[in-house]
Image (cartoon, rainbow, N blue to C red; front, top):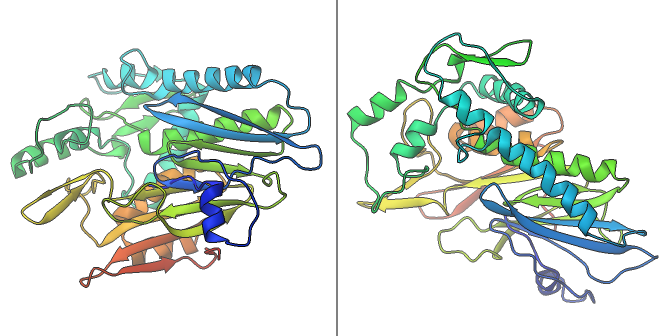
Length: 358
C-alpha cells in the first residue's frame, strides 16, 4: 500500500530544506504538503471518510475563503459513487445486480457504474484475465472479504473449485444501452480494485470544474495530483517499504507526480501465514489461490487513478516479466514492480519511463 509523506519527513530526506511540514498520514502513500503560503496562494485541506477508508485533499488557490462548500460538494459526489458501487450497501446498484439469479435479465445502471464497467472490460482483456471483477466469492472464502472469520485457514481444494466455477468476467454483459446482464446466474461483481481509483478521478474532476488547477486528491492511499504544490514544485509521492511490519511512513522510494495518478498494491499489509507460507489478499482469478510469484509491491502511474488502481492489482497477478512487458506497450502508463528473491533481497523492475526521484 502507498502512504502520504509529511513535510517533516521531507526535511529528514533533504537536510538543507527549510520547510515546515504537516503530517497527513494515510496507509501506503506519502505526500509532501507545505503549510506556508507564497505569492498570495493559500492551501485548503479537507479530510473525511468514504468507501470504508479515509480521504485527504489539498487544494491551492488565491481565493479560498471557506472549505465547507467545497467539502459538501465532494462528500455528495462520493456518496453517489458509494450508492452505485458499494457491495457493503444492500441497496446499491451493484448489490441489487448481484442479487439477480437469472441469465439475460437486463439491469439498468447509472453513468458512474457504466464508466467503471467499460474500464473493467478493458482491464480484463488487456491483462488476459489477470484482473477480474468477479472474484468476490473467492476473496470471501479466503477470509479477506465481508465474512469475518475468527482465524485464518487454507480452504479445501473442493471449496476453491466450487467458488471458482462462479468466477469469470466474461459472464458479465455490458449492453450498448447501458444495461448489465449475466450469462451465469451465480456470477457477481466486486469492483473495489477500480472503484476507489474512479472516486479519486471523480473528485479531481469536480475540483477542476470549480476552477482550481493545483490540488491533490487521496482516497485510501490512491492519488491524483494536479499541477504543483504551493512552492511551485511537483508533488512528491513516497512508496512504502514493502515489508510486513514496516511503519506507514517508512519510505522505499520517492516519485514526483504532476497531472498524473498513482496507485500501489502489495502483499505486505493484508495477509496471513500458515506453515511458513504467506497467503495474501491478491487472488489469482485463474487458480483461485493467492498469488505466489515473488511480487511484493506494484506501483503504477497513469492518466487516471481508476486505470492505475486496477493495473496495480493485475500486475501483482501477472508477475514482473509479463507485467513490465504489458506496461511498456501502453501509452502514458508506467510502473515499478518489486520482487523478493530467495535471499530476502528486494529487486526493482521498472518500466521504460518510470523515474525514481532523489
